[in-house]
Length: 92
Image (cartoon, rainbow, N blue to C red; front, side, top):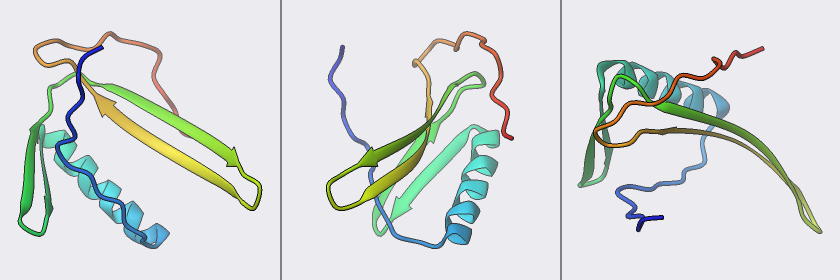
């Protein structure tokens, strides 16, 4: 496996509605094939190919004092290659 370089990272607390609005905006940018991440003076431009791999994962982490749940969405692609076709994800 190769070396990973983090190009941009942020974590923010927000309402469910704010998170949904942010995801809608990401979806709109994803359709165009270009996403620009900005925070303060930092900016990262990402060109996204026509075919990508989408990973959706739900997790539950039980600790001694609290339980944490996560919903992770990850979009990835190989530079210069296209993703293989799998069964489509549906939301219920």
